[in-house]
Structure formats: structure tokens, C-alpha cells
Length: 227
Image (tube, rainbow, N blue to C red; front, side, top):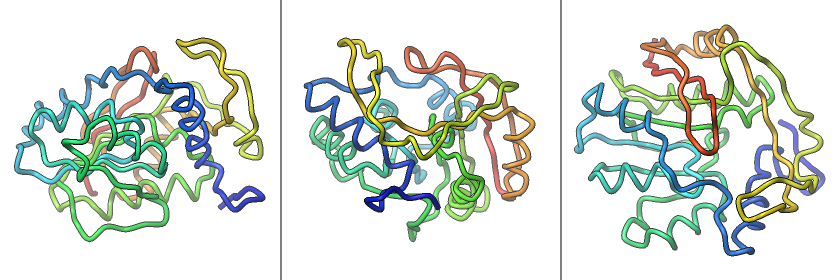
């Protein structure tokens, strides 16, 4: 697992990006929720008394919608800054947010529905991507479902140089140009995505292309269950 000189893992760089945005008094990402989350929950009849987990909740755009609809959700992120922001912005749901690194931490609870929106594409190394899928497999109930969305159009593949994570770079933000930490990215095709899921004992129930505007024009998604 690649670490920087200060011991931080390459995929932890969003912590610095959030800190920079919040220091400027703005969110890094849009607060518009991802439509497919509630669509999948409704389609597969996820009930309010079920146990739900979000991996990589960021600034809480999807967690807010799920919580406001009365679901029992544990929303997690590796970023202390992101979780602190969510607790501050949604004090009524403070107990539902916690810091979690799904590649090194485990939970005692099994979940009926797990979702992760635009998270796995930040994991570049195969060992890390496998760890992500294994966490989902381990934490699903026997008949549980997971929704995984990852940046991509189903065909194009590319990956960033993880040694450049944390390197400052100019990025466009709705508030203007902002100097922020570089982050990691690996986009895969549906063929690769399906192979990853299969080798980690996850079976695809349905798959397709969706979006999470204004942040992501194209996201591959898969609804999966334990093989």
C-alpha cells in the first residue's frame, strides 16, 4: 500500500482538498444528491428498519437525503475533515457519521444495503480495490445488496500516478480557481469492473450508466450481492 513521506496513504488526499475548500468557506462538492441512490432503494424495497452503510460520504450530499427519508444509516468517510463538516452541517444526525478506512477497519455490524458513490475510482492499486470490494462482501448480510458507482463510461481506462497525490494543483471550483491537493483516480471499463467484482465474490444484479450532476457526467454503476 503506497504511502507518502508523512505516512499518509495516497487515497487520503481528499482530506487536504476538503480542508482547503472549507477554509475558503465553501463546500468542495455539490450538495445535490445522486438520484440513483434513492431509485435503487425504492426499486429493491429497502425498508426504513434495515441497516444501511455509506462508504465515502464526503460532505454528506447523499447521506442527508437518505437520513431525511427516515432510514437508519451509518455514513462514513476516511476524512476527519469531511466527517466533522457533516456533523456541523447536520447536527441532528451527528451520531450517524463516523470516520472509517474501509481498507483497514472492520465493523461488527452487517448491513442490508451498502452504497458507495464515486469512491472506488480513487483507489488505483489492485490490492486496494480488492480490499474495498472485500469490505463490502464481509459487511453485507446474506441477502443484502450494495450499490457501487465509479467514474467512467464503461469503455475508457486510465489511471493517475499515485506519487503525485497531495501535490498542489490549480482546479476549477464554482467559487473560482482554487489551489488544492492532487488526488488519485483509476477509471476502468465495464469488462474490468465486472472482473474485479467476480474475483471478490460479488454477483451483479444489474449494471448501467448513470450520472451525479453537476460533479459527474458519467458514472458506471452496479447493484451487487454476495456470490
